Amino acid sequence: MKEPVRILSDLHLAHPVSRIERVSALRPLLDGAGTVVFNGDTWQELTRAVRSRSAEMLGELRELCREAGCEAVFLSGNHDPGWPGPGWLELAGGRIVVTHGDALMFDGSPWKREILTNGGKIRELWDQHPEAGEHIGERLRLAREIARALPSQDNRGGRRGWQRAWDAATPPQRALQMLYAWCSQGSLAAGFCETYFPAADVIIIGHFHRHGRWQRGGRLIINTGSFVAPGRAHWVEWHSGWLRRGVIEESPTTCTLGETLDLWRME
Image (tube, rainbow, N blue to C red):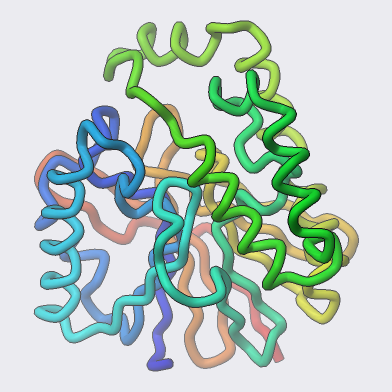
């Protein structure tokens, strides 16, 4: 894999509340990268209403990567579980793990209405994958099955802040599940590593739409956020033994690599 390796997540192409209106706006995020890893939820594979437009935008993105001269690596997420491959990527000899993040939680996205009302289906799927609690390949296969079995049926709400807040708060347990996920994602990621990647020092995720970094159990957890409100999008880059994290500056016409927030040397 050619360096620099740049990592982005949760583009949600063609989703009604994605801030990416034109794929061409992403071009500056690709420039200078040897490989760009799109860490899940890049497009709306399971959302019937926007799937066609999302597929068109995905094609534009792949062409943009070719024009920029960088390799595009797509990892599966709960909105696009159909990507081939294991669903995770290891860098630095396994010390850095990149995966979308839906496999961190028992039910993937417990705030989804479809999952809130179908707990029995989740347990049924777990029963069909008895090794998922110990083997990462089986755990990611299970995550994909949960995503396919209980996809979002609609795109409620709107772009305005109050519309997004109302959508998140109805029903009330939806908001509570979101808050729990936001507050616990660092600990969840550390526990996930302990089980499936005990040699990893760093795990890079998306999924929760809340950017940040945490130290838990001797491990560094990084969430690159999202291009969907209220989350902000961040970038991570691996190059020549250095790991960097920074913000993405967005406008309707262009997205650029903004300020570097953190820099780590991995011996």
